[in-house]
Figure 1 (cartoon, protein in one colour):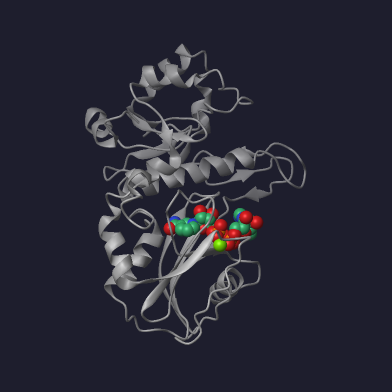
Figure 2 (spheres, protein in one colour):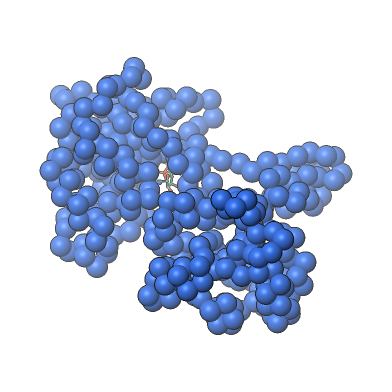
Length: 327
Ligand SMILES: NC(=O)c1ccc[n+]([C@@H]2O[C@H](COP(=O)([O-])OP(=O)(O)OC[C@H]3O[C@@H](n4cnc5c(N)ncnc54)[C@H](O)[C@@H]3O)[C@@H](O)[C@H]2O)c1
Ligand SMILES: [Mg+2]
């Protein structure tokens, strides 16, 4: 992204943005285009003609446009596709598409996917996250796990088929629960060593095979901080492209007031602590401005608005007494 940020790119190109290595198009013309490499993202409007010319300029066969996947459509019913240009992949046939040259040719620049997601509005972020997750799934499901033969993508990219045995592979989504635990007056925030410096979030964990969501919440909370869930209720859900494609299922949980002593599992978490409503409300208010540079000014910071963790925390601050359902 150029230094002046997304807004300028959008206004300059009347466009939206997107995933690492992706390029989006509407059919038949014009194209909504995005592009980048594995960890960087961006996009802009283009037309299929321009893209074909651009690919030609970089010595690429425009045949790669066939690898595009359908990720949505505009209000005018234009189809939007995404394509991985493989800018960062040395094994890719597109490796010769040099990032800097592409940036110049497309009059844009690349940024990390994580950063891009947090700078977008909800609609664009959702599109980007779908594109990123779907393109990655195609990239890692090139072969049939039964026959070992190459699989073939359908036109929209909603599935892959093995021509030798007709096995159909559909994109996978892993369910993850994310829970904001409260003891009635305080909420529990945790951090993993992989989080950006100073950021705390709600407690998350993948569902194991055979588990209900409720069982996952109870197990994860017991495993990671040694607490027993008393009451639990569902809040909302969100598709999330990290680490691959997950469905984040967000819940509020309460523990009994007298049973709040934390036993932090340091294999999974770097830290976990209880925070008062006032503390969290203060950080939430400052969070819009908050980033790593400003972390000295605030004790900690929270995930950006777009993350479902942020919504959970905001809900708790604004509406502390939600009516619980039996766990
Ligand atoms: N959107 C949000 O607001 C938000 C906030 C916090 C976490 N998250 C996401 O939640 C995800 C899960 O949280 P966590 O890391 O605490 O989970 P976790 O506590 O289950 O621990 C992760 C570990 O679980 C194992 N695992 C089991 N099934 C897995 C699968 N299908 N894919 C990958 N690993 C699997 C791996 O060993 C992995 O290292 C994270 O990837 C993170 O991106 C999203
Ligand atoms: Mg976890």
